[in-house]
Each structure stands twice: as structure tokens, then as C-alpha cells.
Length: 452
Image (cartoon, rainbow, N blue to C red; front, side, top):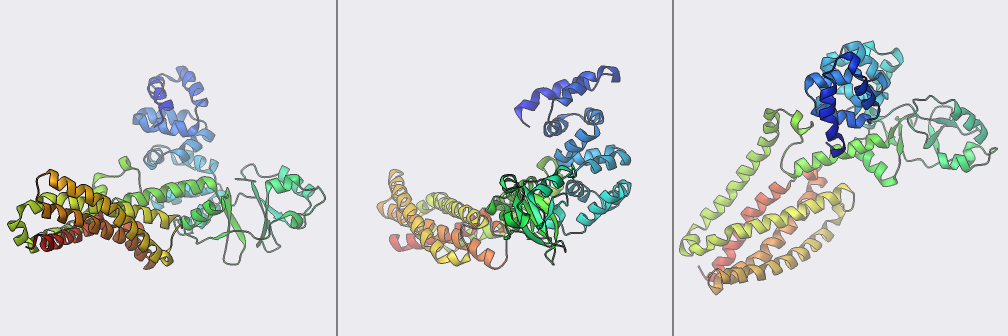
């Protein structure tokens, strides 16, 4: 919650307890607050105060607050308000936002609310919900501007003056033919500076970047980011323009995808809901699968130690440096895998760059490892270890860092190549693998140097 909204909470809690005749002060206060800030305030209020405040809002403001609320607050509102009031709120929203809210409800509840909406709005929502979740079809709106290539600039401005006020954006004006196929786009700036007698065909850009209705939302967001659009057209299989996706929806997509990737990088399945809105049992279920896998993987480290048990018994001092060495290897692997996964996400690298990645990580790992090896050898001598053990530590660190960097660099590329989300190849998994293999490298080098 932003600091600017914190002082509002106590004041609103006080005002909502007043009787109806004394709530004018609260209404005046709410008129000065942005709906997004009201949504944040709702999250901090008690259930009784939350409902009282929401019922004071006008239908227009209440619909915006509902749209800005987190899933937990939205669920509370849908549970507490009568269906006819909810239907009115949904009708005030852009239909793509209404469809998003309805998609989070039980199917029977959503169907009942849709029945209460105006027939035209209900039909549009049903159409949006017919598309697969997380696709362009589910996110698009049909409130956009269509032009004909034969219109003049003057005719186009006359048309724009009579637009539906619910039109999402006029930053881009889309040109369609007699079959509604997308044939061009006119940025509003181009229209404004054009001569009145020019036709749309003369000023339009015929090469239009568009996405299909079945395009995954992550690919859609990447396309918008690549071309720096504020909206992108959506076409069906026959190239007909059926909607647009605006940048506000793309920002939500990018935030959701980033959250999902970060959770996976930490070795957990995505929660799909805000942290406090997710039941503890669900959080545990999302985490236990990876923890079990990492637990089994971690047993490899114990297996390696058992294989070199004789060496450990002969030179007990070997064990002193185990946490230092495998910790450094795990950290090196985590750094690399995070860098590579991010580079893959923004198309900086691809599988075809595997050899370049290999050589870069070999060089980086060797350079970093050599520096750490010098520090490690000096530290071993400072701790009173013999010269041979210090040499073993100094040689192990470059080997472990190089190995960890190579594994962290290539495994995400291989994962993407076989169709696995690289984020699934999380840092904890790489760390577990590097721990076991790094320990084996340490013992093999120690055996050779110490002649065990």
C-alpha cells in the first residue's frame, strides 16, 4: 500500500461508522481519491467498513474500484453485493475487464450474472469467454475505430466526432476492406497532419503487425513491447479484424508473467493468486513437489561424501572447506541461470547461440574461479591448513565455478529447445546438481594433490 493512502484508512474507518446523515464528509473525501487508491484502502478496512464504503460509491466509480481491486477484495464484493448491483457494475466496465472478473467466478455464478446484463453486453462477454484463457481472444475488446480506405481525412474526422464514448483508444485507427479484413493502420498523428482531401489509403501504413485470436498472452506482450505499441490488432483465421488489445492489459500480462517466472526461479509453482489470498494448504502444495525433487537431488551430495569417506577420514580438514566450495559453486550457477533465463525471455539469446554462450561462460567461470581460487588458497593457509590442502582448495574453485557457469548457461537453452519453460529449470535445481558434482570435483582434486 502506498504511503499516500495510509492516512486515509483511519479516517475512513471513523467516517463509515457514522449514520447516513453524517456521511457526506466521507462522500466528499471519496470523490477526491482515485479509484486505484480506493481499492488499496478497501484492502486495509474491516469487512463491515469495506462493504459500507463500497456502497457509498457511485456506480461509475464502484466499477473502476472493482476492476482495480485484488482478487481477494473482488471475491468479497461478489459475495456480498446483490446480483443486480453486480450486473450493473460489470456493464460499466469495458467488456474485456468484465470477462476477466467473471472468469474468476464459479461457472454457475458467472452465468447468472451474465443473464442479468444487457443482451448486447452479455453476448460480447460470452464471446470473449469462448476463447481459451491467456490468449489474445480472451483479452481483446471490440471498442476500437474501423476506417475505410476510400474515406477522406475530412470524412474520417466527421466520423470520429460521433464515436461511441466507450471506444478504448484512438491512438491507432484500423483500416478494413469490405470483408472486414485488416488492410492498414493510421496513427492518429498521421491523420491530424494530413491534408483534408487526402484519402485514408494515401496515408495508411499497409504493413500491419497483428496477432491471432489464439496467440498466447506472453507472445502478445512480447510483440507489443518489441514494437512499442499502445494497442495491437487481433485478427481471426481469415484475417478479419475482431478486436484490439490495449497496453493496460499488456502491462498486467507482463506483471503476471514476471511474477510466475520469479516464483519458478525460486523453485516453486506459481501461486496464481496474491500471497495473502492463497490458502496455506495451497502454498504448501505448490512448494512440496519441488522440495521433494530437490530433497532427492540433495541426497546425491550425501552419496558423493560416502564414496569418498576414506579420504575424509584420512584428512579430516577436507570437510572444513566443503560448505565454502559447494556454496560458491551453487552461487555461480544461480547467477548464470538467472542471467540466461532473463536473456531468453527478452529474446537476447536463442538455442542457436549455445556455442557462444558456452565459450562466454567458460571464460567467465574460469576468470571468476581463478580469482576466488587465489582468495580461497590464502584463506586455507590463514586457517592453518597445509600447503597441499591450500593448493587443492585453490584448484577446486576455478573448476567448480567454470562447471557451474557452463551448467547454468546451457541447461536453460536445452530446456527451451525441448519445449520446457526455462524458468522451470530453477536456480535451486541447478544449485543441487552443482553441489553434488562440485563435491566430487573437490574430492578428486584433493585425492590427486594430497596423494590419498
